[in-house]
Length: 501
Image 1 (cartoon, one colour):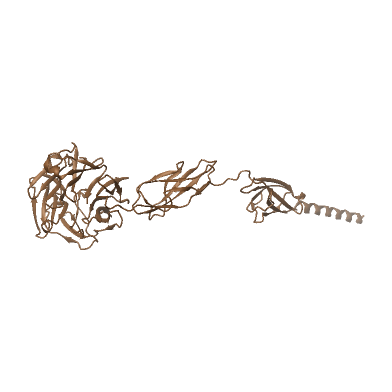
Image 2: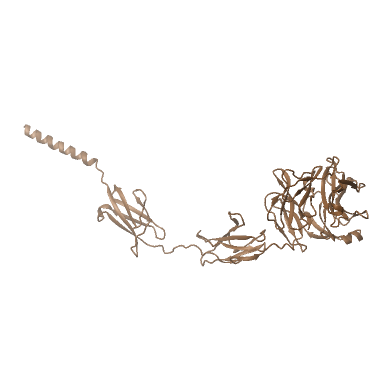
């Protein structure tokens, strides 16, 4: 009886133990795979392998091999994706694999996308020279099946950041303006096809022509994007911009030697004199410790000395001169008697004289003086003119003066001059002529300047309130002296603060 009981207990124990072991056992498998080209059987690297049920993403190595480890199910699906081939989905049962290995063959895409051809045949041609300051960039490109879009990257001198002058355009040309003389420009064209594939073309370059210093005899100011910039122009009406930065620049004035242009600019809250070459190069600041200050900084002619080595300007009621390199500041003995100096011009006549206009700090009544530098003597002239005088300038001989005048009775209630006119005065004969007879009603003539041979007078005209674009006109001095209504011909439109070398 005891024997049978023992045998039964043993069998039950063994059965119970077997049930517990098999209930907790997980079976893990590893599969080694290889991805290859269906036709050539060459291994395919960098293929992306994913599975269902999900395991970690695998990437085939340089021999096209990959390993799937710790597989807990017997049936899996493998998806393989690689550029240039059709994606493949393969199912397998681990129990059916030979040595747990699998080979996946990939079929190439029937259409392989290729980027567009690089642009070619540029205009201007590579390394070309003597190009104009406005140029139509052109190029060629081809793609039999696509509609191409073009983006042009343009590199200006001293700027490593390209300017995107057109973006994704169908055009194969673009006009570029406001280039500088004697400068090298680089450009590239990026081509984009309908599949979004891009090709950046080669870098091309061209060089603009030399600055023709014998052509541009005028300098004037014009607003560009709301900023006053300096231009130079020719008698034929051609012109080019020579300043480009974000500061306003005004009152450009040629040196007597015609090698430099001095002008005014606002620097850190003060008006200073700057100087540059005739083409806008080699800019340097002349004044520093003593800025130019007056009642109206936009109505402020300053002047060069006879030899072009000094610049003469005002600081409220005082007149100073400074060398063109910014040293040797000197003060003249001129007395403004409580007024503010509004313009000054120099002539070498009789050893050196200044013509000076002054204006009351409040009000519009002005005075006109001749100041002898050597004798430190001044005399008021034309004291019968009761009004605002400004923009006085000597003729090349120093025997005549032109200036702007607005009588006191011709101001609006808020102080706007309504009838600025230009007057011509002969110092020897004491002849005073109003030469603005032909100006249109409601406009102002101002800023008269003699030509360097004294044969002509150039000046500006605008609406009396100053709103709108100013234009530049020219008159013949011989007509001024013989005709009460001299002809005024248009020289430039949209131009202000004219000066003639």
